[in-house]
Length: 238
Image (tube, rainbow, N blue to C red; front, side, top):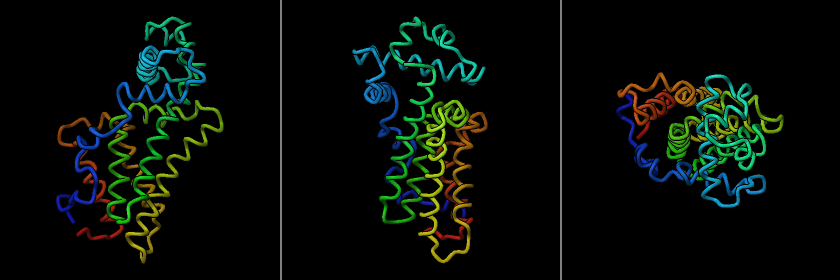
């Protein structure tokens, strides 16, 4: 089966643009969600000011940490990058550690929704496309968030580290279940196939520099991932 034979009619969104247009976790809306979920620790009472500060803090974190590492990054580095005073930082985040926890929290929300949406599908083909495209498209939009968590899980407290690692395990478990539904009589280790598929998706946000060529659009990457999965489990798409 060639990748060009794959059809998108089984998915609720046929393209990355369609997904992006309905994706909630971006722009000011994303930081409003973070504010709502962390009101007890954020001391800025007015949402518009809190959102502005949070956006500066996360943008600065994603700019600095790839260069020197999150653990080496100090709040003074953040202050210099954001233009916020130390008091302004502490009014928005309780500690540097809180930034990593908030990133984990946001990525967890997105990943949980992807799994929930895919497992709600009765058609296993639709379920597979939902989890593959959902994970791939959302991590493309939120590349900095997913990339940060991938490399900086070690910066989280122990319980949060376990929660972060479980996000990937939940993706693998859900995908393996879908694959078993697609090929119930197969002798293949579907956990292994799902692990490889998730790794293939992660490749795009972990190494974005490899996928900036116009010929490797995220839509084509999704089609190719699905084609490879179907070929691996010897499933013929209608």
